Length: 70
Image (tube, rainbow, N blue to C red; front, side, top):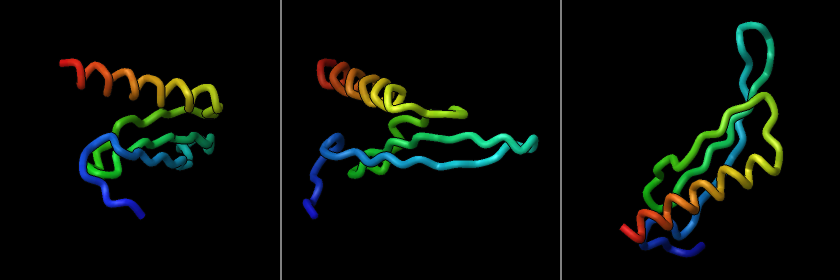
């Protein structure tokens, strides 16, 4: 495994599932920076499509670019 030296070199994402008191299940998409272990995004929904995953990752990438330009 590669040793990380700075933020935004590698991100990890994972899905989690939980249940409301009504019995309805929901999912979360968690995206973390592996170096800082900072949560970059948490997407929540009853269903998370591949398109939604792409939107979340695009949003994070845009924020990272804006931060680098500032």
